[in-house]
Amino acid sequence: MKKTLLAALAAGLVAVLAACGGGESATEKTLRVGTLSDAPPNIYVENGNYTGFDNELLKAIAAKQNLKLEFASTDFSSLLGQVANNQFDIGSSAIAQTEERKKNVDFSSPYNFEVMSIQTKDGSPITDEKALSGKRVAVIQATVGDKWLTSTVPDAQAVRFPGYAPALAALKSGAVDAYILDQAIAETNVKESTDTKLKVVKSFTTDVPHGFAVKKGNSELLTKINEGLKQVIADGTWVKLHEKFLPTAPVPDQFKA
Image 1 (cartoon, one colour):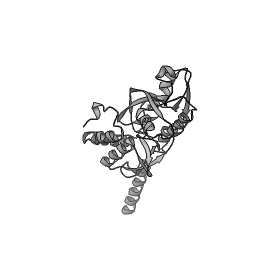
Image 2 (spheres, one colour):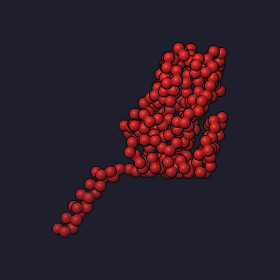
Image 3 (tube, helix red, strand yellow):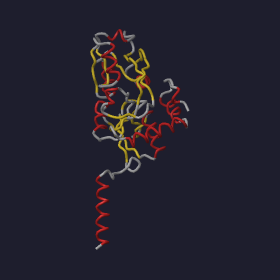
Image 4 (tube, helix red, strand yellow):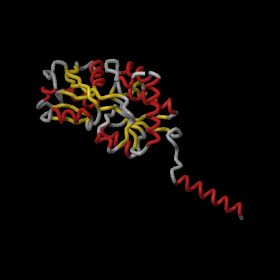
């Protein structure tokens, strides 16, 4: 009788523990990473592999913290909502940490800073932000570039796109006069565009940090990402990846080994 009672109590305790969060920890489950496929050198697909500075940095962090990753492509405009509703465990897409976004997701420690550019087709008369007045200008919806354009040149016509590829196509076709985007991606567009000559008209550094996004309250995963980031900065991995993918961008002192 006593043994039966003890067994029943033990079974009940296991059930209670399971109900109270006995799920897999971050190191036990495969973490789904939402990213983009079309924005080199930060986030893109090459030979079926999700790569770029942001994704390779996240892989290095995961290796330090024994985390398993599975990457999937999405639109930038949907990414943070998909992180917030558990469709993805991590968002990796050169995401600028704005106060508005912090209301919906939590961010890792900064791993880079936003450097924006104005891009046009070669031969365009646009030379700076003043020349964007009255023009149709491509931006990625809900990005720093979108906010910068509407606040800096309010009479420009912002043409919003969910991802980088359709925005670039619009610039090449002449559907828009200019394109506001991350400097590294803009420079890659110049190098890789064989059908249309492009140029970077002007670049400007912001104080807005990039971070990996996780669901609000996921402190376990956030701690592991932050600890791994410290490790890849300390051992020089951050600088090596930056030199490989973003060789023309400045290296802030805080990321030097």
